[in-house]
Amino acid sequence: MPTTSIINVEAINNVQGTLQVKWSPRDPPILDFFVRTWHGDGHWLIFLLRSIEQYVSRTLYRDIVITFSSAETAYFQSYLPFFSLPIKLIPTNDVYIKNGPNNGSYYSQMYTKFHAYQYSDADFFIHMDSDTMFKEPITRLDLLDEQNRVFVKRSRFNEIDMNSRVWQKPAEKLLLEPVLYETMTGFPFVYPRDLYENTIRLIESRHNKPMLAVVRSVQDFIEFTTLGHYLITYMSNRRWIDNNNKSYKVVQSWSWGGFGPRQVAWYECLLRAKDNKMCHLQPSVSGKL
Image (spheres, rainbow, N blue to C red):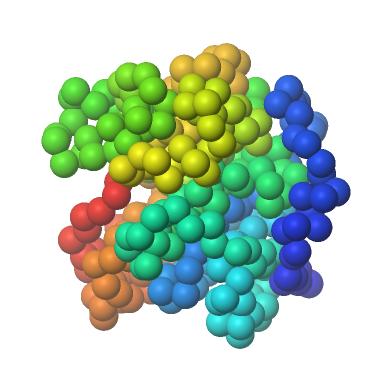
């Protein structure tokens, strides 16, 4: 039976040493889920894990890596070990960026996702947020194509409504160049492991300071829009492929909007109904995506 384990991330990093930017995936590649969460989203996380258990074959991934503040270890250890899933719990010290939502935890979570490669040796990371869940079965072709290219669904910023352009400027301030596309357009985001460090090195070289100092110096920052821009701008098209017809098999909610009875009923329906088209109680949603 799959087991949940507590991982010491410092030990992982000591063994790995310095990550080589030039990298090739194993054959077949290893994929891990990567979730950065906090106790305020713990109830959402339950539905995400239930949806992985129901809709994602164990042949598609190795582990579900869940990171959180070390101060919240007792909370997550109180219930996550009882899932029959290969969960790896990684408590980590929050890197304080600046004051903000959840006492600054919001920005710390983004910073952790920029460094997913430090928490696992996976070839590809399947990013899901706590307030997302699968609504139907997925296949390998929902994650990677036959050539192990990741899928990118993108929209031109100048063609979307103003409310959806909120992350363009933060990405541009990090990269110090124009960002023309929003690539944060529907979970899951699957990234190759060398994307993170390559993006960080570009940012550091342009600002001439470490990544932590950079994100502390800008007014705002964003992880997925920035990583997506590097992917489509600087990585070979042998590494990624446009997928503007991407089938949405994930529902994205907004955890700040609350988790009321209507949300619970809709999620339970998506997990239990034979056809998710039978689920009519979808709450209105607004948020990051």
